[in-house]
Length: 499
Image (tube, rainbow, N blue to C red; front, side, top):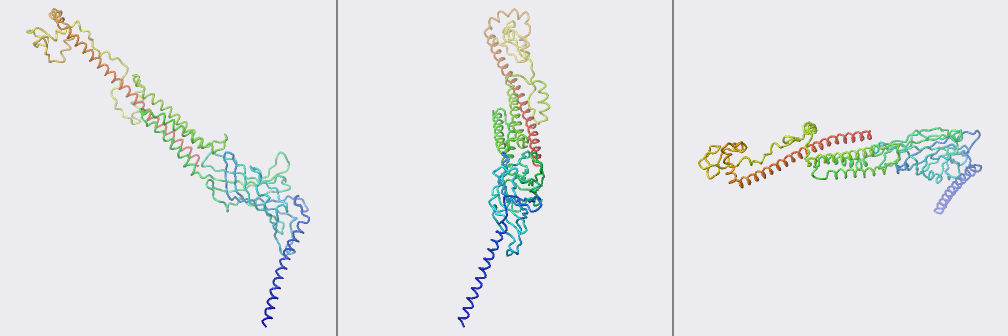
């Protein structure tokens, strides 16, 4: 009994294996038969035409996987994309039931006719991988060819609003050999596929609208349709704001310190020139990332140029301020119109304290000089007299010296006309006190000279202080003007670029 059960099991397994092998052989033979029947009289070198010669409608689609690079100086866009081509081949149809239900086959690229869809604005060696993948054929004659590729396309870059710019790159696809009466290129959908897009650190993919064009070129009378994908990408500006704009604004702001730096420090010109060189370096960095074109100039470049012009202008103004600051060393007083305009009006307007003394105008000071040629007025008439004789001040003379106490009366006696008695005593007394009078005159002359020197230095110091105040007011005025112009230019250009 057990031997009978084992024998039955063996027969079942043998039958099952035979059925599987027969099915496999049948399937393989169906595919071989299908391939033999399908491609027996098929020519992949020519465009498939059945009956009436109608254009083959080719649907073109694209799915952008990644934005690899946008070379702005060379204006080339490099992307990783999946190309999708669909068309109808009337010679590739069969009845699925006649071949064991096979309704789809996948064949190598070179076994079927494939439309020569190409990128018109190709910047590389063609569409890479175009002939390296397989084609899917349906029993209804619809053919699909999907393959990944790296696309290098020309892209006209508009950097007017850099780094807040949005670029639109055109990807026109169409047949290069067949005109519109032989191959009609059309789009699969209204926009490209972005469902599998990988995020990029610099660019944000906004969309891929599609537009179909029909163009007639000067070489040929037939129309040539194409499908153009408008790859719209927006730059992420945070990197450029932190590394270009923000340092430039700070450097331009540092140039304001040049108007606050005291002229006596000797570093005003050095500071302005250092700021100017820093802006020149930033302008070189920006120019390396932009296309060398004169059609459109970025606002940020214009901002750098304006900043350099402002810093250059501030350097010139600093030279003017230093010139006014040290002008007083030559002793030239401040003109009346400068004093009226700057020291009186602008000084109060700019809140510069006016703590100077009375203004010094060009004038002569000969009225303060004293005539030291007093030989015709003997010193004995107010210095000495007889022992029992009163002098002009009504005081007795003791030991030949006049002890007078009225300080303001001496000069009047000193320079008054002598009377007859004094004129009679003049020769004798003058001979007696000639050495003393000579010494006193010399001392008085020296004292007056010292006084003149101090007065001259005081006037020169006052003139210098007035010119320094003019320089301070000019510094304050230029600071306000430079700040207003800088803020206006910065806000205007940045807001224009950002919006």
